[in-house]
Length: 212
Image (cartoon, rainbow, N blue to C red):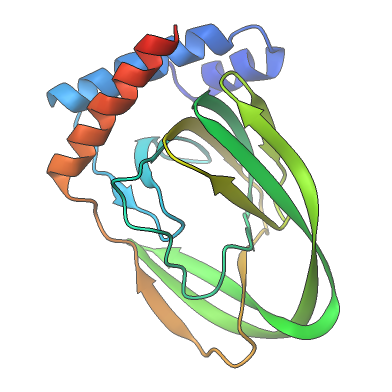
């Protein structure tokens, strides 16, 4: 099984997307068959995350499906990571919208502290206005990056499958934008129903095989 370093090398070289797609299809087939245990995490932004490798360099498969509940963040879809993201779109269509922040009173910046499946959202003193800019639209085979600290939101319609690589940036913070009056609170990232995770993994594997 490919690990972070090999996947990162192939994607940054630009010539290994086919091999990465094949690895993803085989990994999804193993999850669907039960040969590779993987606990799907139902993300508040509307997709299931399948963690494949954890550490300073992490690897996940993200699955979007009409079968999943709609996004339900307590703040908003605007967020930034404490880690550098490198992603390959394996199936579907995905658009990134970048956010430019200026001082204002429209939205409050929240720091997101994640631990043991729980996100603690702490309001900061900073309030901002956000202006949207095109961050690119991608179809199968598209590779994109989002550096740590870049505010964005991702738009996906229908089914999509991505492989996401994350490299932790020391001193970075996960942040989100929400209503100015919203207080400190916690959100539990629930484990997806195991049967649905298997079903989505099987469907994603089939889509990737059809695309080859």
